[in-house]
Image 1 (tube, rainbow, N blue to C red):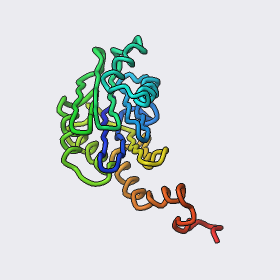
Image 2 (cartoon, helix red, strand yellow; image 1 turned 180 degrees about the horizontal axis):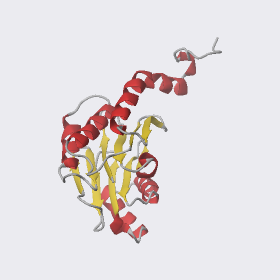
Image 3 (spheres, one colour; image 1 turned 60 degrees about the horizontal axis):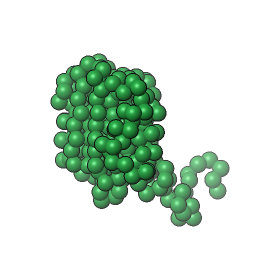
Image 4 (tube, rainbow, N blue to C red; image 1 turned 90 degrees about the horizontal axis):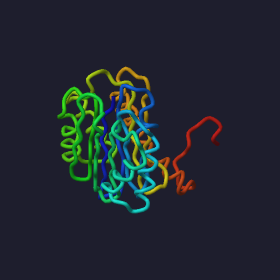
Length: 223
């Protein structure tokens, strides 16, 4: 029901993921990102608690492989889950339980991972990894390109209806958190949202860190 990609940028320290699903509201349940910490993905028959646990264990310094083992011990239904963990050094680990749905696969690359279930073919995650590794620019752009590559490689067996793009950087809050829910073409909508948001992104960061240097708010009532 889901395919996703997570990545790390060593030049900026940014961490993030892009995800899409046939289910509504996929990002809130499946994608967990924290600045300076890492990414935890939990999908298939999803247990969102494994995402928050993944971030907690990343903060404690456990390796991605150690975290997968801890998640397995914490969930008696682990064979239904598909999990991915990426830390703040770009190390990765993935897991697909024996009861993962349909065609399912994972792939790991340099500073990235990708995975999916109910896929049209098992080459989808590798297509995402290959695109992420060869891309350049802002981490959000690279993740979105990878998600688009997964769709072009076949994506899910059926249609997708929600998608999200989430990136954390030096601030403690996500600098990118874009979502398209119950949309006919959610990945294309995510591309539109990113195109609109990217030119404004730095202004919002500046408003948080140094309001006196921020651009004009440009809203009715602002003198």
